[in-house]
Length: 476
Image (cartoon, rainbow, N blue to C red; front, side, top):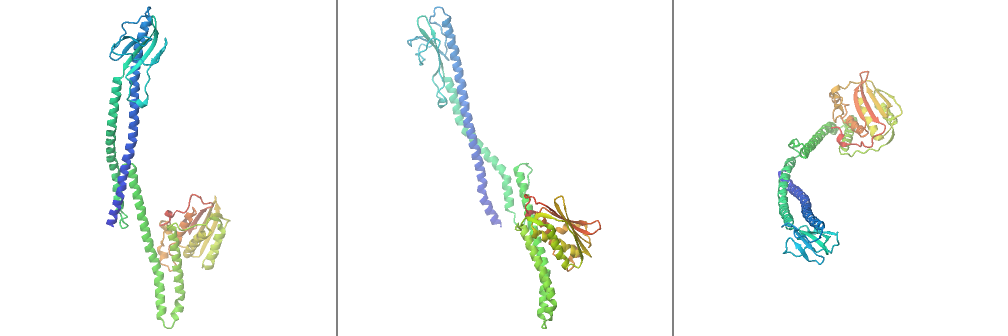
């Protein structure tokens, strides 16, 4: 058993590691996509912002020089056009010759098409495909009328600083994202391992539980999450297994006890008859042996019915049934074998159900009532609010209130009936209640207004389609 538990543990260990690996892979992949998209977006926003600032600076300087020329009545080329290390200002003739420049060492920085008076030019961004590939300058140009020709005012802003800033951020992201992903993967690996540790503890505990230790339970840590619910579910499952095992053991023990008595009687009768050379013992014991054989046959049949109920093997043929005819037939059968007065008051009862199984219910309850009656058994049946109600009354000893629910358990017989030779096996009422459950019906016992014992059977006229027979609801 220990070797099997260890083998099971080893077989499940890769699955545990697989959960951690899958969690790390999924989380890091998702985070990588998020970081890549976020980093690309950050670079785009940064690049756009820096270029916008450069263009704004170029336009401001260009407009200033254009106004300076336009406000000069002579329309002469200004000698002082300003400029600095962050911007280069040039005035270019119609022939493309640089007339004035804030940096005389540089050639014309305008490479665009010829401009007419009033037209302007602004260099555009090169797009996302050249995220870190900048033009050397951001250029703004406008044509203005000079003294003798059209002049073009050109302002160029170097993009060295902008390109450096974007490259710095880009390299930081390129190096930082893998580091962040690595740290995240390590953290997720550790956290998932810690999260799965209680699950592994539950699995180890359950793997070590055998059919001799069904009373063991897993530890429930009050984490108020899925792990706690898993532990509670496992304990509920173990409780069901323990209950089922106890029911099975009790069923086997009770069945063995019930079968032992008729078998012992049969064996004794046969031994006596065989030992009698005259053969008279055969004739004297034949009736007794037949009675015990019949009793054992009924008991085996009841045991088989209960076994089918527990295994969900008991099938029902649901159809329209004249319940009053079924009940009347069983009452007629009882009158032929009973020594008591049997009375019947019927109303038309038509329901949906299994006629054979419902007849079995009436047969069991009527036999029980006749077995305990003193002088009479009374049966009344009526239809009330779409429910068929059958009341079976006998004037025998009443059932104590504490035992009124217990008598529907398997192999339960009250002390007085157990001591009588005519006592039943204690299975009829249990089987009846299980069959009625499959019909969404009920059976209860109590006392009538006359102080007699009554059994009340209620069966709905139409069985709800969402209420099939559930073996887990079986008695015992």
